[in-house]
Structure formats: structure tokens, C-alpha cells
Image 1: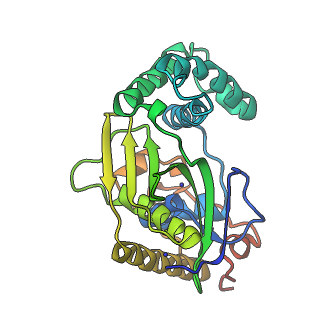
Image 2: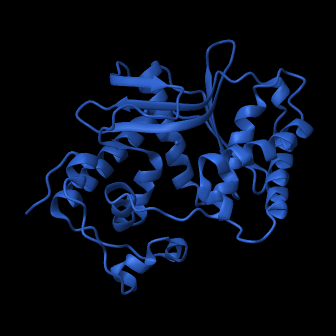
Length: 292
């Protein structure tokens, strides 16, 4: 995957590589802490590796294809061209991440690539990329909140209208949330809306989530009040994270999502034993000194 101008120590970059690491918060990590403080610790402080999943890897692949699709000129952004990019991007991903090569074991990955192709079909049923000229794709953004956390993330796409209004677009390769369960997804988009506001001094006209799993689009027009509320929530979450880091009390929070957790064997809620936190890891990642 920020609030009114002026921005405090805000920077942006089009590169996926980030600047020198500073304590920061992304929407995904904020949601991790809300879901389970111990999961946040495992991912952010311990930086424990997680085996790649077929679904997450497919999402990475489809995002890469949709990014490259716009390299072609208008008129050439066809479904056939997108499908032709799939094997190229899959080969590039396996070269960059050798662990992906063993994702399917001895099984042929052709069937899995077919499911990725189906997601691209859904995309073309929702948008005509030949009518779009994105102002940015896979844009790394960050903004420092005054007396607060550094906000950081990657925006899938930003569209800019002739009048300068902005639309922030995020692709999701899963299904849209059931009615009443959109809060987590909208938080992510408001997070990015806040970052754009902080760095560019303009509130995005539209926040748009494109769900390729079921062909749904969620659109939302954020207000200044909403983004102020999002900032307040982010500040509260950051304070809770730092307070937990100081106390060292990273309690697990069980839910239906535990079945998908890669760290269940280390979780005390399931009879596991959490590893010792590496020396200096809390100070490095969160900028606080834990209690002795």
C-alpha cells in the first residue's frame, strides 16, 4: 500500500526500493496490529519469513502484468497482450524470488496461470485501459506526520483528470468484502488518501478498489473530516504499537483468521513458543527502548 498541508518531512518515489529504513507504518501493518499484536511483532520486529502462498503470488503476478500493460500505447492494451505478458512476468518473478519456483512442487503451474488469466479477463470487463493514462503506477509514497509516525506504502495507480483531480486505484485479486465488512479495505484507501493529501496538498476526488475475484468495484469520495479521522486512528494505533513494544506484551489475538497464519506453530495461543526478539530489533523498527 496521508493529512492538511504543509507536509512534514514528506517524500515520494516511484521506486519499490525504500529510503534508509526509519520507523514507519503501512496500512497492511496497521491492520496486522489490529488483527493480532503478536502477528505484527513476528512480521515487523522479528521479520520472520513466511512461505509464499499461491493466492498471494498470483496477486503479485497480476499486479505486475497490470503495471506493464500501460507501457503499451493506447490501442495496444488488449486482453491478448495482457495474457501474453503473464508467462514473461511469471518468469521474472521466479528469477527474482527462487522460492516461487517450488510453489507447486512437481505439479504443472499451467492451471494456476489460467486462474491468473481469468482475473485479467475480469479486469477488462470492468475497465478499458486504452481510455486511461495513469499519472503513476506502483507509486511508493511516504509522509511524516508531525509528532507522529512516518506513513509508507505503495499505491497501485493514480489517475489525474484534466482539472487536476485525483483518483487513487487499488487492485484486489480476491473477492470484495461482504456488506458491512468494508472497513478494513476503506481504511487502507483512506490511509493512501491521507498520504496523497500530505504530500501533494490535495484530497483525492475518488478512492477506488477494484476486486478482480468477483468483478466488483468499491468507490468512495473522501472528505477532509474523514481523512482527519483516519489520521487520528493512525496516531492511536501507532501509540498502541509503541506502548506494546515498550512493555513487551505482544499478546496473540485469536480469530477465524488464525487458520491462515504462517506462524501458528510459534503462537502461545496454539501451544507454541514465541522466539526471543533479536537484540536491538525493537529500537530499530519502532524507535523505542523496551523495558528491561
